[in-house]
Structure formats: structure tokens, C-alpha cells
Image (cartoon, rainbow, N blue to C red; front, side, top):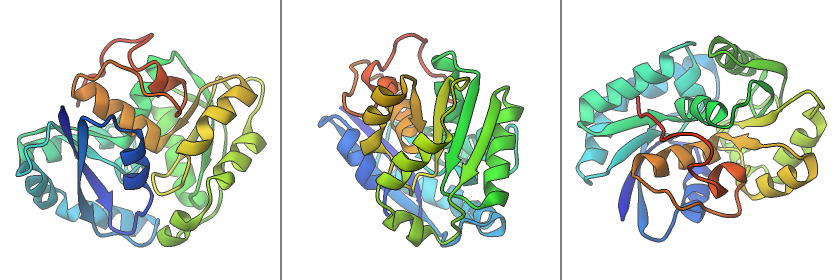
Length: 243
């Protein structure tokens, strides 16, 4: 049994349903929302103004860990910003915390991956920030492509086929893995198929968030259906260190 607290952008309509489907029956999800409608740098920065208050709210549900389930708000200001966000959550709530961006870095290291291609729902500006964040953490981003979207509700209405199509388009032989970024972008249902067809790990920001949360509460049994990372929950790396 475990309880996961999830901080969600207010206009995100995807991350909670995808979390629910992937979580084992004995693990429950409890969400709080942070106001965001546009995936633009100024809006993203303002989203975390209430992070302490919402984290304290989640702590009253006696959650075991709190995840900032949003990629852009946890990589916006570059190297170390994800861990800064986690520390703010922990200080306010008294609970362990991590972020989507932290989880992505840890998942890539866990799989021993260094060369990736990046696909995202973002516009060029936010996509460039995501690329820089990965590079600052030691990864070689061979290429980065976005769908050019800013309205978060529009992103949430996209079918998972948009993630499938972009992943197929951006793959290249020298990439060791594909990263699909934005937790409001439906990705989970196409990860297994993409891995079978492309022969390499596919990491989405929702998938890595689920992975980090489950490892944080001590879950060691894998979750099938959402790619290698969740299927083989602990192999080959060691337990995730929560920021």
C-alpha cells in the first residue's frame, strides 16, 4: 500500500488518468492543482508560486511522496532547478519529494543512456529550454523537435498517435533512447509499440514520473504495458534517490 501525492498544472487533463492506469491497485493517487493555462515561460514560472500551499494540502492526506508532475515547471531555469523545486515541496510539506525532470534524469542514468532525441508538445522556446536542461545534466541531445503548442488544453486533446508519429519521425540510428516531454501529452499507450518497432527505450515524462514515485514508496514489482522502464522497475540500476 502506498499514497502518491501529485502536483498537477491546473489545465492538465492527461497526467492523472495516465497515472491511474499505470499504478498498481494497492497504490493510490492524490492530486492538487497549480494554476497554468499556457505553456509559456512567464506562465510556467508563475505556476509554482503556490507550490508550498498546495504541498501542505497534499501532506494532510499523509502521502508517502509528492511528485511535481510537470516537466517544464521543473526544468525552466536550468541545471538544479528541479531539485530546488523538490526542496521547496519538502520544506513546506515535511514529505519526500521529486519532480518530473528529476525523474527523467534519473531514468536515463538508470538505463545507461547518454545520447537521446527529444520530442515534445512545446513551442521552440520551451523546447530549447528542455534541450538545454538535458545537456546541462550531461546528456547529448542529438536533435529536438516540438509540436509548437502553447495552449495546454489543446495539448491535452491530442491523441496518443501524435506522440507515436513524432517519435517515429525523430528517431535516428545513433540515438540510444527517445524522450517524449510534456505530462499533458498522451504518450503512455504508445510506448510499448514504439520500443518494439524502434528497438530502444522510449521515455515519456509521465512514465518516468510514475517510475520515480513507485520506487520512492518501495515498489519493486514491475508494471507491464508501458515500456521497459516500468516493466523492469529496478533492473539494472539501484534505487532512485529522492531529492
